[in-house]
Image (cartoon, rainbow, N blue to C red; front, side, top):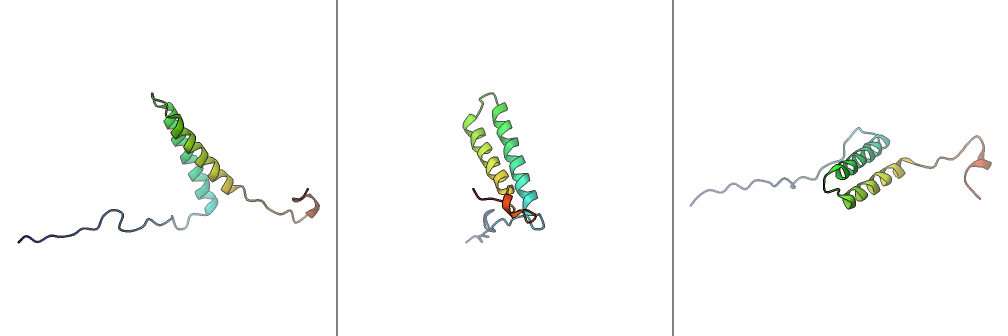
Length: 82
């Protein structure tokens, strides 16, 4: 009888988010990386337009996470509302 050693798979431990990185910087990096991948897809000879579109949408979502509305404390009449 041979002895079998079981090894943990690569997905055994969950990946944790980068600690110490402020959220705005991470969102900006996510947007930058997604746009870089979109350009990479478009520069290929086959021109992966659906992949580039998907990455562009991901970049826009990351940029929207950066756009957090702030309330104007100095002049409340100009902040929000109709």
